[in-house]
Length: 125
Image (cartoon, rainbow, N blue to C red):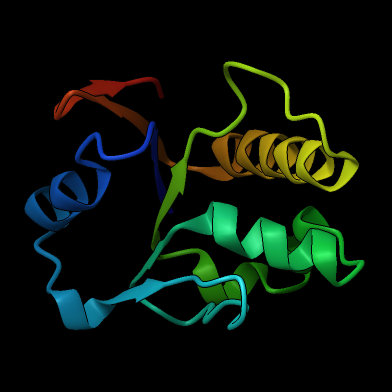
């Protein structure tokens, strides 16, 4: 699995498409309402999945562990929402913490971890 992180609108999806030769049809984009499609070649916006988990009383890391076989050959993309101002609402703080725990788990499992900032890729692992 390859893992890409970075801030909003920094070029994560474009970097994944270029580096891995992905088409738009191969990229599943999480929405807070739809959960996740673990079998997709690329899964984008994992932070939306963690928001869905927080609002539905699920542990995002546990869900990923239960479905480990399905995403082992995928490219996973997550927006960095855990830097900056701490949200005031308890649910938004829980979302931020859940996303941080999931990204730490995925980084430990990943073959490569890349951070994208201003369209520039920095390999972390």
